[in-house]
Length: 391
Length: 166
Image (cartoon, rainbow over all chains, first blue to last red; front, side, top):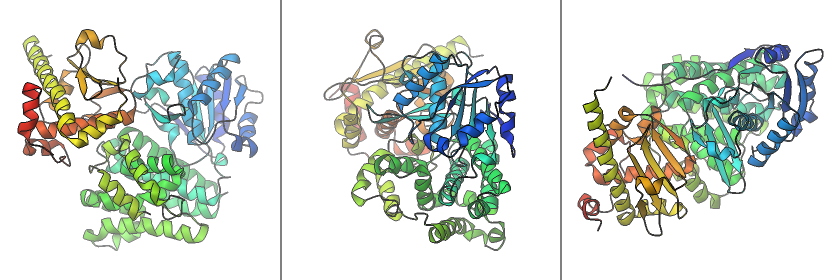
């Protein structure tokens, strides 16, 4: 009998205007004096003020704000936020933002619950103790990373030029609020590419070495939600139903891959991001079809199943032996459509990667833990072939 | 509940395999350029530990100028461990040491916790896979490794190092 583990303790609150639940839910878990963590862009577009507005008249209050989280979560920023938290005598954390804001807030929480001097002591897998409880809530403003429900945080240590991974249940928020008003301002192109980040999470969660019945369930539903909502979310950014659908998809995919991990798409994608500074969602979009081609001989049956959820009509009109290939072609078709309509990069060169960067990307990709969970072993030659196929 | 004699036997098996693995890793670094290139990625003084919770057995290796050095319990206690892979208990370790499953499968089944950089662990896993390719015949290794790394030298050469240090 196969052994597997499944862990997720985050309460998910999802609805139009779900933000109104924020103060009462925060109080319920012991939060009274909140530190709100966010980024400069979100402040500029009014997302931070929107969150603050829900605290008028509430007994829980936001007493401190840190809104300068950069695009990549950094160790120095984490340490600065911890100082702000302590100086303002805060007792809980609210993170409103994308992956970088959420990962930064997760790292802050790890420092606080362990009363750590150096968070680097907790790098790795399951290294944190439960420690003292620090109430923690996340409000995603993109529907892609799924970080609101994952037990992973990645923080860059610029002094050593290393991305530190913290894989531990203590990074999971107590609850997350998925409110479509927080993602409605996301422009068309990132709406599509973050949807592909979600799709990649779901596909890799479903097809990796750690996939199991529970994570499969979440992954396949996530794929279905992406298929049902991505077109409308891109075409009609203010469409509440579509935005809600994409938030659900990201959350479902997040729960899946948090437990079953990701694979070669992320292994190479992280390296492309690190070496060539391509956005994570863009890297996932470009690499997904090429990596699926690589894994095809191991995953024919699973890709056929994915096709059922991704394109039911296509699935029913395709012979069994062609379904897996049709799935990959369908995904390629989606990218091509939005490349033509809104300029989504289809190749690594279009995203700014140069050929001389390939050796460094290969070298970095092989050190990425995601490669371990890929169903097919990946060598340096394989990575190079995939990169050139996607170039 | 495991009987005491069974536990002692399991502990002895793991201890023995760790000893062989340690020598095997050093042998692989000496004779195989792929293992050597992974070895070269680590800074000098890098300390890696493979252990079984709660109290061992353990394998501790420290990078020297030309190869890893094994550290005994006493010396290991004085070192800061850069990469610490801790199997949760003996039953979690046995399938890996007996060649029934590999490190990749152990990772998939959450059989160990790990302290340190993921990138370092990937290099160590590569070295361990290369070592196992030298220590076990292909028909055993292919049961738990998707792609068996190619040996640059013979198994005999690897065992010569394991047995004699040459």
